[in-house]
Length: 602
Ligand code: ARG
Image (tube, rainbow, N blue to C red; front, side, top):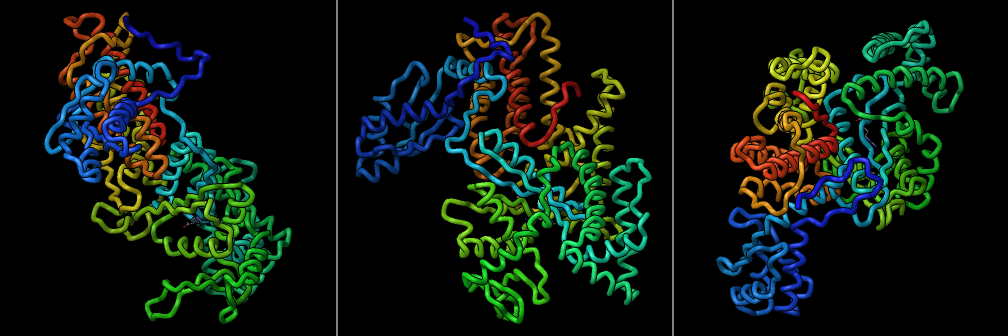
C-alpha cells in the first residue's frame, strides 16, 4: 500500500519521528541487558558503516569489563535481537563487532513519517530547552563594518536559527560599540557644523550614511589632532555625554541613527533579519556601570591599583611577568569595555533569566572574555546553573593566506565584498539561465541568493575557530563543497518534480530499495540527530558537512537510479519522487537554518 503524504497545511501537529539509529540502538540495548544483565544501560556504540548499514563496536569493551569472551557475548546478543520489523539481519564480525542491516520497509516507513511532517521533518525538540542569549553581529557606530563583523553576523545568525529550531528561547543581543571617548570629538564637531548630517527630509541609502559618517569622522579626527582648543572642547563633551547632558545625548543619538541606517542596509544585503529592539549596545548598560563597580569593589573581587579598579588573575601575565589585570574602571573614572560586558552579564542572567550566554566574537578577544567570565563567577553573577561560552572565530584571510586586506593594505569594505560576490554569482547563474528559461529578474534575484549564500557557506563550512581564506573563485564554484552545489542539487530536484506531470511522490514500503536509495535514505534519517547535536555544540559547520554529503549521495543516486524513466513501474517512479522530494525538503530546511536560500529554478 502506498503511503500518501498528508496535506501540507493539515491541522494536526506532527509527532517527532524516532530515528532508525535510535530504534536499532533500542533493540540492541534490550538484547544486551538480556544477555548481560550487569551491562545495565551500556552504550552499544552504534555507527554508520560501509559494510552493513550500522556497526556496533561497544561489545568489546563490555566483554572485557565482564571478563567474558567478546565473540561469545556478541553471539548471545545476536541471538536475542528481535529481527524482522526493523532489523533485517545482524551478525558478528571480527573480534566481536556487530554488523546490522535494516529492512527496506523500515527505512521507507521512517522516511514517510518524516515526509508527512512538512514543517519539521520529524525532528524532535531538545529535551531540556532553556533560555540562551546570543551576542552577535555587533558593529561599531560611525565605523565601517569589516569582515570580522561579517563572521559574527553569519555564524551568530545560524546559531540563533538552529537553537530556535530545537525549541530553545533565544534572546538576540547586538552589542554594538556605541559609547566611549571617541564620541566626544564627533559630537563636538557636529555641534560646530550642525548641517553635516542633515538629509533635508530625503532618505539616505546605507552607503551614503556610511560615507557621511566616514567624512565626518575623518575631519573631526584631523581637527582633534591639529587643534588644541578643539581637543579641549571635545574632551569636555565626553564628560557631558557621561553625565547625560540632554543636548549632548541628542547629538550622540544622531550618530547612532545614521549608523543604524548603514547597519540595516548591510544586514539586508546579507539577507539577514536584525531587529531594532535587539540592538542593545554598550550604552544600554550605562545605568548599571557604577553599581557593577561598587559590587565588585565591596566584595573584594576588584581592587584599586594605581587608581584604577582592577581584577587580577594568577595565570594572566604580561610579557614582563607582571600580572595583567582586567580594568573595570580607569584611573580617570571612565568605564571601559569590561565594565559594559560585566553589566551585560548581570542583565542577561538576572533580568533576561538566561541559562546560557553565547558570545560570537573574534578569537582575538578570548582573553578578555576569559577574564570577564571569571570575574562574573567570582562575583556570583555566573552561578553553576549558567554557562557562558565564547564562540570564538578565526581571522578571514586573503587568497595569499595573510589577513584580508585591499591591495593598498586597507581593510576591505563589507559592502564591496558582498557586491562582488553577488556579481560573480550572477554571472554563474546567467550562464545556465537560458537552459532553465530564467527571466532577467530571476537571474538577478538568484544571483543575490547564490552570491550571499556562497559567502555564508564558505564561512559556515569550516569550524568557526579556524581562519579561513576568502576566495570568491572557489566560493562560487559549481563543483565541490560550496553552497552553489547544494543549491543546484535542490533546483534539480524541483525540475524533476515539475517534469513528473501526473506522477506524484508517494512512499512504497513494499518495494525493495537499490543500494543508492538505501544510502540516501539512511542519511536522510540522520537529519534530526545532526541538527540537535549541531545546535547543542554550536557547530554549524557539521550541518554544512551533513548537507554536502546529502547532495553527494543524491548525485550517486541519480547516477544509479533513474527517476522518471518510462521503464520504471509507476510505484518505483512515485517512490523515487518521494525520496528526492524529501531530500529537497531536507536541503531546504538545513540551508535555511544556515541562512541560505534555495531558489526553485537555477
Ligand atoms: N563591537 C565589538 C567589535 O567590533 C564586538 C562586541 C562583542 N560583544 C561583546 N559583548 N563584547 O569588536
